[in-house]
Amino acid sequence: MIEQGYNFGYLDENTKRMIRRALLKAVALPGYQVPFGSREMPLPYGWGTGGIQLTASVIGPDDTLKVIDQGADDTTNAVSIRRFFHRVTGVATTERTAEATIIQTRHRVPEATLGEHQILVYQVPMPEPLFRLEPRVAETRRMHALADYGLMHVKLYEDIARHGAVTTSYNYPVMVNQRYLMSPSPIPAFDNPKLDRMPALQLFGAGREKRLYAVPPYTPVRSLDFEDHPFVPVRADAACVICGSRASYLDELIVDDGGTRHFVCSDTDYCASRPPLQEDAA
Amino acid sequence: MTALMTARGLELRFGAISALDDVALEIHPGEVVAIVGESGSGKTTLLRVLAGMMPPEAGQVLYRGEDVHAMGEAARRRLMRSDWGFVHQNPRDGLRLRVSAGGNVGERLMAAGARHYGNIRTEAAEWLQRVEIDPARMDDMPEKFSGGMQQRLQIARTLVTRPKLVFMDEPTGGLDVSVQARLLDLIRALVAELGLAVLIVTHDIAAARLLAHRMLVMRHGQVVEQGLTDRVLDDPQHPYTQLLVSSVLAA
Ligand SMILES: Nc1ncnc2c1ncn2[C@@H]1O[C@H](COP(=O)(O)OP(=O)(O)OP(=O)(O)O)[C@@H](O)[C@H]1O
Ligand SMILES: [Mg+2]
Image 1 (tube, rainbow over the protein chains, first blue to last red):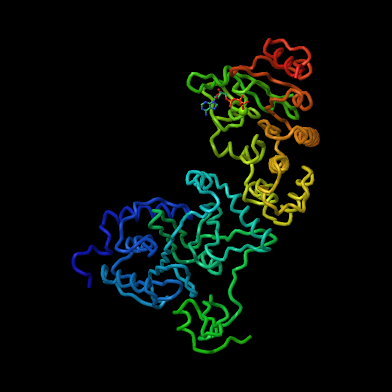
Image 2 (cartoon, chains in turn blue, yellow):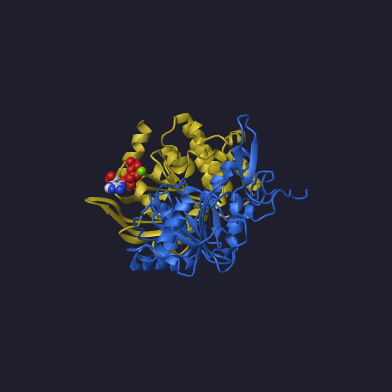
């Protein structure tokens, strides 16, 4: 049941149409940031208003929605967005990655391989991958227009010169379809390879910055690197204490006053769908 | 020999001031041309118009036969990255101060597509050595360098991709006299070694004599005299050039 007084998906039809037009442009130009008329949402910026507007524009009555925050379905942020959509669309929600047709996410890509029937919607705080290097917006636009990305490599060069390796472990910049430099949003670099040629449609929404962008299915997405310092998706060298996985991305927990550390899967659905406590054969 | 760059009929006004008044010039491969003239005579404006950084109100700039101001920004930027270099008077305008010396030199290589960290570093170290900066300082920030070192770093950063044409706007401007002399020697050696064409703006007649094959004398936006450097300095024709040369001799 949709709550009385709301249009389906909360946004009015004109706004949804405007956002869909922007999304079509984004799909046609993979990785290119398309401006859109971001609306006020009943949540503060930083709570995923960009992602929510995209989800609201693509969701239909037959969809099944999953919302994750840092991989978990049960955080305040994920729960309130899921409830919000249930109230304003009446669609089914799920915590199972495989059952969802739309997955809205903050800071993670699910461990399970996504399919063509699914859409992954990322919440993006800062869509411009060059903003720390070049504060002038007009100049970053020019750099994108001319594919002039030497400066981004200078940043990687400086990391290696100073620390022996690229130190960026979140929001690691990628080249989309060999054309546009793109911020994958603050996902761990570990997740970057999942973006490459993903069968699902990937949509990115930044509410405060009023930009959206997309990676259509099966689009090449490459993490920037050097030939002699190839990109490495880092992961803690440990097993999940719940399911024993040595393949998934782990969160670190301090479990007692002595500082004992445990690692658990960040993707709670992945973890729950595995047989418990079966340590992978070494 | 065909000209590398040809400009004709350049006009540019700032309000009532005519910064460029019917300026024409040619520069050939491997040739060093000095532009001298009093402050405000239009030297920097001319360099910026020639390098495509500012459009003229009239006239044309051709680089290898192509109109620099008609070619579109993408093509112009490509030229800036590959064929041209620009050395600013103030090294702070030409350097990234929060990027290491090695990163500053490597930037143009990376912009040109270099993707091998080890090779970029080797080449940056070689260039630091060539401009007499100890490669051990490669990972230092240019902010810690003296003015002369910063200027040498800017030159290394500009020349690393071996441009064909380099614009220099008073490259020795803000430096001590002894440092200036050393930098001029270095520029002269590099220019000869690499066979660069250089258009250098200078206040310094002695520097022009040392470096330039030809020189242009500017006043009020006009080129009042041009010719081989020795001819212009030893036998100046225009009264303004005569004044300029005699004031240097008197000093
Ligand atoms: N952006 C601008 N706006 C207005 N006037 C300008 C601008 N740039 C230059 N001018 C004027 O145009 C004239 C030529 O300036 P330009 O900087 O080219 O001289 P210059 O020969 O390089 O002088 P200097 O030796 O002091 O560097 C000067 O009168 C200057 O004040
Ligand atoms: Mg000047």
